[in-house]
Image (cartoon, rainbow, N blue to C red; front, side, top):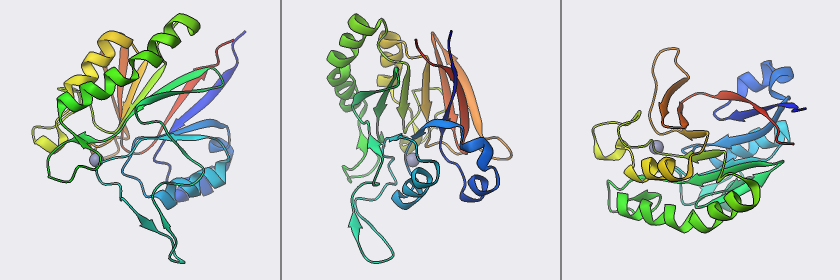
Length: 213
Ligand SMILES: [Zn+2]
């Protein structure tokens, strides 16, 4: 019999965690879609004490300095899953960082052909999952949206055709992305593409998941 588990995507506000400990302490895993400070991710992990899987966004810094001047290039205690698939308690989570390239800065920016190449680099691991676990993956977290789904007209916010191809081929149940701001009370926007639910997270989102036996 499947066991109900709760999975959470970021951002969880500091105040919210403080006020609603009961709810957030039930989370089994955290996912971050980028553009969040390292210290913030470390704070959430230290409060909830569960694994956090993340990808970088176009606004993530190369180096972040702590209050005592320590330099760090990644959040401590968190797992970067760019270009690979991680497995946690039977859940298969893949990641693809970055946005469409819109400046000369190469960090966390890609052209669509470059993102296609990253997708193909993941293919061996995804095929192995299909053979040995019966599915390619469950969730793909990305920073940018897919092309023409939740994306914008400007180059920076344009979605990747590579993500459409990914969903065509590898059929994740969810593609969860950030990068696009939502306004008003809206925390999430959900669209459907073939067998995948595409979720735009701006605030936070809680996903209930039945653990695989
Ligand atoms: Zn962004």
